[in-house]
Image (cartoon, rainbow, N blue to C red; front, side, top):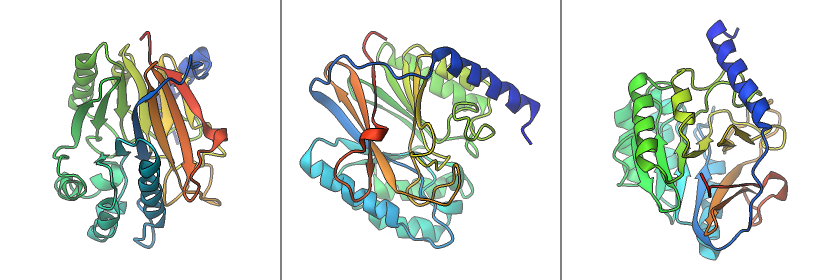
Length: 291
């Protein structure tokens, strides 16, 4: 049952999406790539603590990095189911095999255990990751990494931190990496996401260009995974070990790659593990110029 509060949020964001038309901006040209990074989705396998999808994605990203520019790899949270030691232990040597730096955030699964446990293992994947929240300035964009404060949600202090980081980056466009988007962004799961109404302050920032999320384990072939609401682009990263939405009958491990050109065009490509070429049907692009 969706609460009245949730219904109001869902309706508000759905109306915003309808008004915006949910249409990606048309790129002007592709230019030369100045930044390219891969993004890995949720893992948290069950019942067995095995990570074949993550292992395949790491192998493919490393191969991709051998052919073309890959600057780093992002993780959107929910790596270890219930934050258990066996899952952290089993996935750690796989993530340590990445040939590019790995920058993760927490998800609701990591919060089932402790922040301290997450940071212990995150430091093994990348010693530069020492906090659940951090910022990277990459020139054409600033990336704000914001782990949830509890579950998949934020308290007011967390919202204020995000807003401050986005405002401090202005006028540079910002990509926000959070585990889940706010309620209503993905109508396939209308009652799951960030519930704090102050998240509206985050997405209202004029230089926020994109929100990159996982959490929902959606089948890319059966949902609308990339959409524009107002001036913000929402990009879903599919789960690597399990698919939940619209159902669990079919799972295809995929990951996404973001490339930013000199002209400010952002090309988002989706790769199925084992296939060296991106899937044309899931291509999405938008421009960060003139923001």
